[in-house]
Image (cartoon, rainbow, N blue to C red; front, side, top):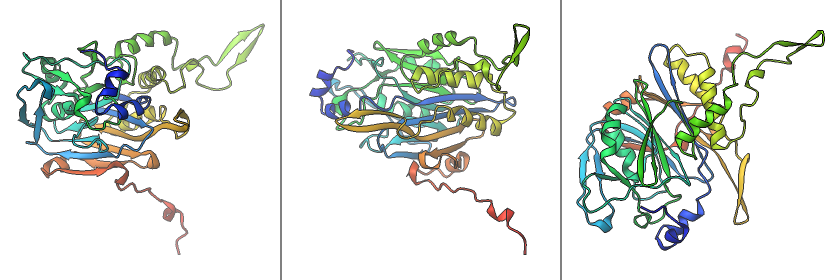
Length: 375
């Protein structure tokens, strides 16, 4: 399957939308954290420049999981019934399809989809293929049907994952996606589609950002082997000592910009060097600390589009406790106030619901009353 060109997209129904949004949504970061007691946390940020109407949706067990091929091939589709309930995030601006980019199922399998522009080329479905799934339905398929990374590693390569822009009326950006999947055992893989092939990599860094491909990022970590926790307090100099002005000197050279390569290095080393948390609560907080280091305020990362300045910024953050089936969510206006959801209760209700992430009940905790003088 040839990589989509501007000329090809311009002939497709979705072409205008694809081109208009092509330069954005390339600053997402995902990180996994494991605790001493075995708890596994998977967190991620979502950056974008436009209101995507990000919607959190609960999907009960037994829901439909469509497996289809491009309509032009006229191949028979299959509709499975999901084995697992899950909760996931989708852009509601994309009408007619629940394209889940983030989520967690009742078996403790977590998913985060990050953008991989410039390198993604999906698989070509042929008339002889029998197993296939649209990239728009891949999230639903994985979260609804798989309970572990081990099972996913064995079964997913049997399917062709495809995308046809002509079948989408107005997609806000080309779905150039790669995914990180992590389960409650701590097993984690990155799935990419490069040169028309599915590429599965063990997530050795426990981090995912954006372009280039995952193997490049892991190789790039070797440029930063001098980064360490312990810096020198002083060094001898001509019969005296030159003392450090403060701690942190051993991390000199840690990249601080927002390019995908820099965020990958920053998140990977902060996660690696941090003290191993004792339990799920501490691991969740460590994930928050790491992701705070890649948070983008509005206006910091911007570009000119048609004479208008647009800015990618962190629109929401999700922290998934895969061990205890809990999630924490914060949006850009409530970064200090996370909403917590007990997924076991949500899944046991066996009902579907959806809500805008921006509409969740973020409530700041005001402790002023504790310091008021008693009468």
